[in-house]
Image (cartoon, rainbow, N blue to C red; front, side, top):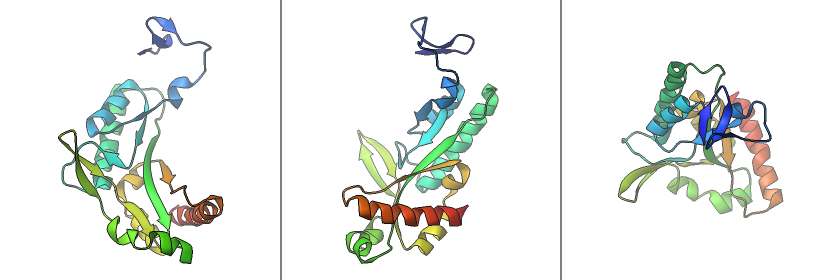
Length: 182
C-alpha cells in the first residue's frame, strides 16, 4: 500500500473500503532499528519499539530506544505531519510480591536483570532486560529507563502460563507501580 494523504491509504491505486475516518492516526510501525523508526516518522505512522532492537551500539537498550525515539520525533517534525504521533515501548515487568512470585521469578532477577546481546542472521541484536523485583525496586529501575521517559505509552508483558489469579495479582502490583511512576 502507498500513502496518498489527499486520497487516503491506497493499494494499487484503489482506496481502502470501507473508509475508516482517522485510520492513518491509528497505524503503528514496530521499528527494529533507529533507521526504521525514522522511516516510520517519514511515512506518518506511530512508533512501537519492543523489547529488542536488531542493532547494537554497545549502549543499554533503553538508551538505544531513546535515540530511536528522538530520531523518530525529529523525522516527524521534518515531515510536517498535521497530527501528533504516539510512541510506545514494551517492557517485561514481573513484580515479586509474594512467595509464589519469588519462587517462580526470584532467581531470574539475578540472571535476566540486564540486557543481552546476541547474533541473529550474522547481525548483533540487543535484547532488553526483564524488570523483576520488589515494587519499590521496579519503581526505581523503571523510573530511570530513558526510553520509558521518552515514550508516551508503556506496553507491559507478563508471563501468562501461571494462570488468571497470578496475573491479576501481578497486574494489580504493576498498576500501583505505574501510579507511582506517574
